[in-house]
Length: 107
Image (tube, rainbow, N blue to C red):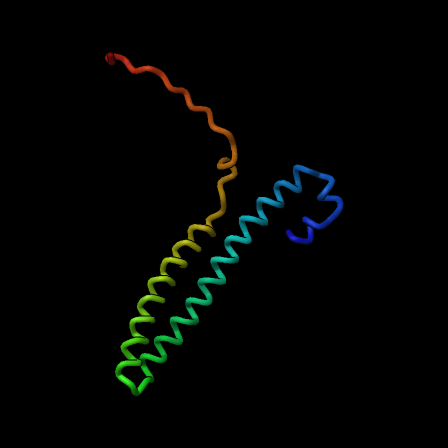
């Protein structure tokens, strides 16, 4: 998509440029969340390993607390990523017409 955005043919076609720009922005957000998830997943694994292998009781306790916080953050990011990976509905970007009418029996 990035290479298509830089293509002179795409730049001339404003509709295609707009579509690619939207898709690029949507995918960039997904990539950022996926990177955060991957980082937190790795940090969680390190904290669990430290909690299991440390000889110091205080260090084990701190590592367990950190592992629990990271596990929660990992779950949050995982849920967010799952939602983001659902393909968008093509009708989401269409306009909507809402008609409001008075009800019967009111003052």
